[in-house]
Length: 314
Image (cartoon, rainbow, N blue to C red; front, side, top):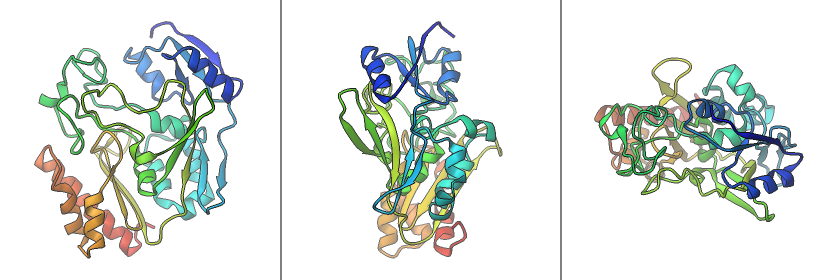
């Protein structure tokens, strides 16, 4: 790990002023992803701004009947919150499916959203990677592709988002609230918080260097069943091969794109009376990649949609 400066933010304004003064700095919360990348020298920020003690961990009702979850609420706190468990069970299940108990105790909502891809070629500094070093090439294109993008990829990058939580949040139409040093506040759908790679895969999000996630807000849960399921190579300490979240008439896929993938074609097919299998097949028409992986996602999506409709996953 290369040397870096460390400063602990006294409050939100102090954190933002530090970030504005040092655009290459990174915010540090639980550190479960950033510190690992720094040890591998994949991330080399000259300064860390510790925001872990800021008062941003509350989980509260909103006037509209939804929930506002502070960016520093731990994954454990969110998954165990009675309001989340009773009204957004698919979100609780998604969080419990990600990482070990120890990681969930440290990882935060904001940090979970900001974690970077776990593409094996991005994580290996000896391999060319356009996300890590723009213009160097994409080793994944000719490498193992069992965990890489089926949707939204480009010739520059086929990496996927590793966040399980964001997939469920996307199915609930959640938004992330952010603030900048000039006091401007923005609300971005979690579904589109991350950019698709295009010609600039090294840019993960549209967030400015001095932009801090304050909270994630969920609208009231939709009518209808909810379900969540994740398939992986082994039961723990590995990312998803695919995941699916269903909330009412909304469907989101995970581990198939650089951001949680709202299955709009599947949703439209369901609205037109299609069966779960037909809806899943409609979404996979535009998918690229291995036929075996596409078949896995298609079967999984059909099963989870069926579970939600039957109330099995609620």
